[in-house]
Length: 484
Image (cartoon, rainbow, N blue to C red; front, side, top):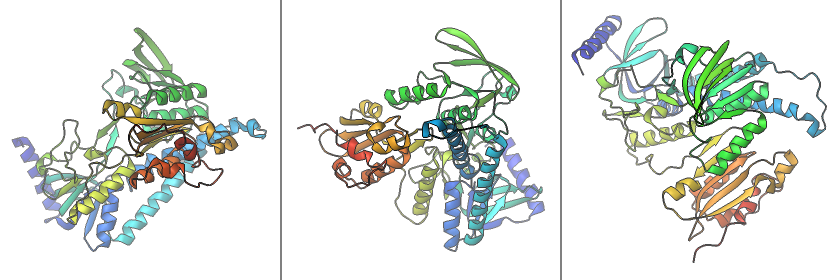
């Protein structure tokens, strides 16, 4: 710590001391109200611990407020809109159909309000104290909290858990910041359909919102610097996703390097980029940036608390999620954990175990995921690309979703399922599905993997007809013979 930092920290302590002579003491202080942090707070408070949770803005974290659940709410509204567009296919005549984005937004807001109320009730019934305000460390396990009313207080915890999350990355592209682009937060608050939405980034957020906004009636163009969509997935997945977007009428520009942005999102915006050895310019009314996440770790005094960061700005943790400071843990996105709410929930289990002297760790755990396009993309375990890179031999089983008879009753036959089976035994190595209900189907395979069950247990199971899960029988019935 340099002299300026020491002086700044001391001034903060002196200022807080004038307002509140001594810090408020807690058994556990949780910085951030996300999935891992809130479950730790509720659980420990119910065990009789004195627990405080400091939250800057979003009660319950990003998932129920601005990310997972609100986005899926909007996506479902877009699904309903797409069914209206296909209504004749189901023998239903449509007349005077229009999209009311204010009503779409209101439905989402009502859901969020209900979720926030559930969280408030959990804080009340658990006994954990919710403290609204911005906080930063002023020393080891000591935090200064600035409340919305301007009051400054000090809090100290015998143990501290950090769960400050991440925010949307804004790349250093000329004119981008000045154009005031949308992130996922603003995109979920739109009260009118963009005339032409340009999306920078073809990841989870970009793909989900591209399809949703197109179904609401927006012209949509997706620009990504990678040579294919979902570039970490197998090539057949990337090709299927690209075909899906094209079928929806979404333009896709791959291998694109954006050089400059001009104008203002919401009015008129121009994006200059190069692709296929030529320079291009694209005009739109709105710009959404979805190129990744940046950890919320700067400006909160981690250095004065002895908490080190990685070279990417995440909090440095071990397999128990312990930081470099004694009795301080980090959970969720800010700890560099895979950016999924269900992983943050498991981080809660890891830290709770460690606090109790247990041995649960983050290494070796499954990381399932689902992209909520329509149809969904879901995967758990290895894909072919990873297996080949790691030199793991496998047998491949693959069937089209049309082989699952339930999809024919729904008129949702797009996509396929595939599974990787060990080359010399019947072990399940991985499962990928692009199709209706893919996330739910994946869950059954994941449970089998957790239980160490052979693929034949799913192949030979008696599953209800006609259901989507029944498709696993068809899938695992085409596994090639094992090496002998």
